[in-house]
Length: 175
Image (tube, rainbow, N blue to C red):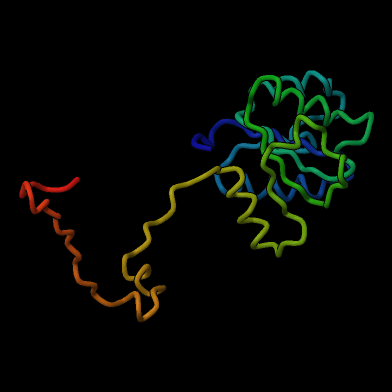
């Protein structure tokens, strides 16, 4: 993600609010602007209007996926379908294993980042990698490449030249 000034909407099921706050906290600490309902919406606000406005302004939707995320009656379906419908950036983070068939078919081919089972530093790295998106790696040095060669590969080989074969009758090259 190139512009961290555009807000990122955090989509989650209520029981996963600790994961949502952990994600939002670390994204803010790394320069991203986030919209998290429990931080930004007040008692009495129109939830559907606030969600609609936040989704319309978001540069991405970061979804905290767990079995609860796909339970019937949650607003999470409206959140992820909005991101998909407007062809926005949808960043699915799996915080608990999902059962086979639990993921809606339209989301199944999307690349996901697993956070469950990782140490906190590894989960943080996975989160930031997922939100930033692919990056060009640092160059690999030639010395490092040569370090992986076996001794037999690490020798100079003579250059082999192909000799042209001539037809003895015509003294012209054979194809």
